[in-house]
Length: 554
Ligand code: ATP
Ligand code: MG
Image (cartoon, rainbow, N blue to C red; front, side, top):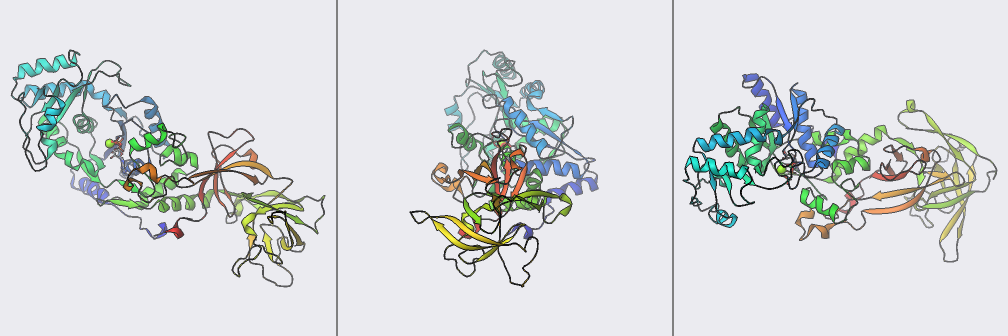
């Protein structure tokens, strides 16, 4: 399905919020985007960001950026900064509301003590294996821990000692005292605190016990006054637990609403897998232009507006959502088609000599920056008797429907003359190395006077003026539709996902600035790489081809 056929949908979350405001259940809308700073954001996170920030904006509420940093072992400031950059790049602003779960560690600790005092939490000293064995299964209830009936005094004492660093990692945990026979496994006395002698990226060595995500997340929302806590479906089963904590602590109750996470074909989104791709050098880094990360997409030249349009277009629902990568690529094309300046570059050059054009002449060809937007002006492209054209714009024995060059055939050079191929020159191996052509010198910006039709238009550069540039032809990172289905997702990597070539570009492109994106006419969209380009030596990343080359393969 092409993107233009996809409806721009309203969604069920918008409906819930509208009803909550109308009924007076809520006076305002407060949402949050709650990443864990343990990796870079990917396109799935963009969906969540657009929903949370988008709805807050729409209802004139606010959206917080909160880092759920409860696992010091995997978290890092590098990720915090990268995530902030990504959210800003997408065009959203959290204002004063930058928060960290770690800001609430004192409060969470106090709440844990409160639950112990109320007889609703206890210190368990079973080993991890014992705990696992006693947890039961989906069909069998769990067994109470032998430590479940410890006295409040003993629990308070042990928890204090846990906090003071008197025990090694894993020797005790604080658990909520709920119900070991609950059908929902999340309610079988879930862990609230564990011992972890680890340095935290913000609290340093202050703590050697850390709250579990499930004990921090809901209360974080509550502290911040989040009205609509929007998350992905895997947290549906955790909702009763969050509600239990909120109710037992008697604090402000946010409403949790779950939606289906985004799955994108030809892509993996697990942070663990993305981290492996980076660590084991399958890609050049988190910002490798083939990565589904926002830094990667940005470097590849995807405009933020295209990513936002994509998130709007795919909608929000409860059913598992698999979206074809081509939908995202179409959004990128649509956006760039509007904004990218046109330029000419030849990726696989074949020399053309115009035999009836003076060898010492250089003609300034006025060429529009954007054929549909004349207000964007023109640039001048030099024309001479020696040009390069794309090798595959010539065929020695072309079929009828081929409207480009062949022996005796005519074609128009973009913005310039109609030429006819008179002679094909080959090397000793029989490779075509040059075409000798004649130009109809009355056809600059004019149709042929005799009314003959010339259908094909091809791009070109003057050989003498062409600038040699590095071009990186990126393709999909995976060649299988669902890499997670393969026995090992690494075996689904596309061996042709990067091809580096030298291309001939029209003059002027050497001065292109990092991040600038162009349409190389008839070839694709290309963006100046922000990392590896140097002044006067741009490296061009192919952002996306002009048409979906994968569609016909399916
Ligand atoms: P993990 O928990 O495995 O580290 P995660 O992708 O859930 O990875 P978080 O940092 O917890 O990472 O995600 C932040 C927010 O983004 C969460 O609210 C999560 O539900 C949401 N999110 C993550 N992946 C997707 C996705 N594919 N589609 C939509 N939302 C997502
Ligand atoms: Mg998560």
